[in-house]
Image (cartoon, rainbow, N blue to C red; front, side, top):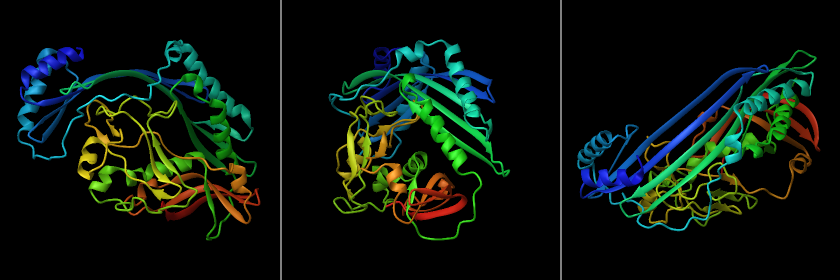
Length: 409
């Protein structure tokens, strides 16, 4: 059923309500191999409607995958009844105007049209290349390639309407190594892209082999205070763990140490942290968020100074701020909540090699463990870690099973 028919059914069944329709169709292909052989091949899809109704400052949400006229009418009438009994909140609102979007939604027509056999061959060939790269690589763990194709359609009672399609590709892989001394190690890595041709598997292999082989044969490591450099995936995991500090929902709940610190120094001048929903090729780049606000580039920390929070329509209204285009849904079955999009640190002038060539010792952390133990309210953390100790740019020893502690800010 298209949006026009849905609109007619909603207006007929829930007279006097403001409404928002979010229609999602998604198809996923998954190819898994292990030790060079095809292990599992699946295709799955979901299709459904997320509906929000608003009346007298009361906001209700419901969803359905039964989009027959009878199913939609039942969904709307039941939600309308429930909404009238919910507590009012003056911050509840829908998007009232459609603004011009600056970002496209990348869609890889060429990648989608490639034969399934080519995608299976891509995975098996990559997995074989791992075991052929070094004699210390003695096996692989499951390698999974995922292709996701989706269509989003949006319409609300203010006439805000848009639709777009998108694609994404991921490859997750693991490998096992054994040193001549008998030490065994396992490492995992991943890559994601919006276009199949941008899935840089050579770089993925290079980084995985580095993590796997450079941390073989670890030696005892005494407790000390020293500079720490986080490898790409470890840094991304750290950012993800503490992303909630920058959300308007955390500010509304007073669960972030950044509350009230706009315009103040909270980090080194070397730090600029950005959330950019318009990033070219970004995994979270789309024209609009899931409430109808154009996605945008938001600077959260600029040269160490905190600039502000990310907002959905609701948290912006609660905070007296402007929405930043960060109201997102996990699926049609969940209401929009404030979340990050393409969330990253701007690169500095130094390369990884430059950082490791610093005077004295530097610990390069390749993997972090126990991220769930972080205190997302204070920013404190104490994680298990593996990595490599360097002195003057030269490897001193591998390190495994140590604890890295500090504060995110």
